[in-house]
Length: 453
Ligand code: ADP
Ligand code: MG
Image (cartoon, rainbow, N blue to C red; front, side, top):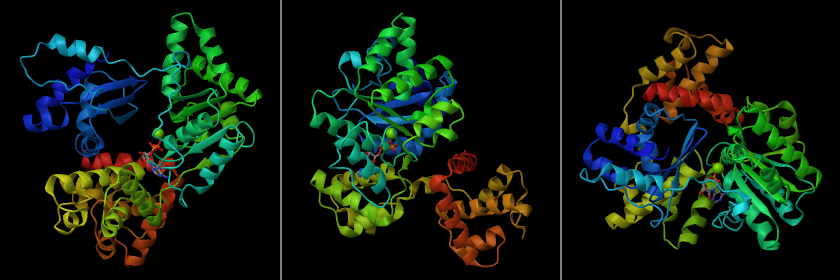
């Protein structure tokens, strides 16, 4: 199925300039497409940022046109040796490209192969503790000291890019450091599922189960992608119960609470949070600065405090984006021979460039938001305090502020409210709600897609 990627590339190639194609897509590869969970391999994190910002729609359309089902698209940085470049020469026989793509092994790892799924770049030392994650880190430390006791299962949740994978991988790495014989296994739920299907199909269902039974610690990442396939969920439930009874540590991450995942069995959902649920929140300004300072120190690069503050102030999505922006600035600084602060001051850096690339008007925003909530623009701009209308109005305020950078006074006149403090309050309300309300997060993404799409 991996040769599908070349069809996808061929389609993308027709849509953009040759220069852009060779810059951004030449070295990409399809690493995995299990269960709609697409992982695209790229050369370095600079590409991740650019592909995400500029080409996500294009990639997803091309994937869909090639009958690939998409739940989520992620990028993974591959070291130079792993990502062989896909030559763009048209003369290259198509078969050799196919062969090359076929040789890429799907990323399925099982305990049998002695691969524990852990990446030692994720440690507790390089996980910066802030007000957004201190409780979760405290629990993590307690698990490292005495696994399988108080925080079992350990359920960690939070939006994308907030450090879930990093923290649970760090727990696994530390456990292994304390006891090299400890059997830890990390797997995204989508791989658990596909490995299980493979095992069943090759008549090795029992062995699959036995391998998991032997573990001391099982780490399941991105549990929200659990599928409603009875057998595999049942298998997971069994493994969960067996390990739990043996006081083995179970760690599960998800972008939302189990009760908010439609496909999950109720009993399993409640068991996952037996020992509580810990969340990772959006970092505050100080947390963001601390993370950036630590990254700079780890990388051994000099960056002015003002530049750090500029990035921290302007990236309000998550830590992954924060890092992406940071790498972009460092890369540009190297290429242009200017310091990060000089780049910011001369206007070369514009953290909000995504929205600048696709100009939209405030009128469009108000229209699309109203339409999304089945309202007319007039309803949205009315004085009505009916809750769904008020909510739509506040969403419009939020988008006008975050995407268009409009002043609160200007926003007030766009959405029909009298004074700008109402706008400030509305934006704050949505900001707060977004921290824990995953439905709202999904809605906001859908609305943005409608606006930009
Ligand atoms: P998630 O799994 O929640 O989507 P990740 O664990 O992949 O997020 O984190 C995204 C990026 O941000 C990773 O590169 C990770 O190392 C980094 N990161 C997240 N939280 C922290 C933190 N507290 N300190 C340092 N780096 C962090
Ligand atoms: Mg993750």
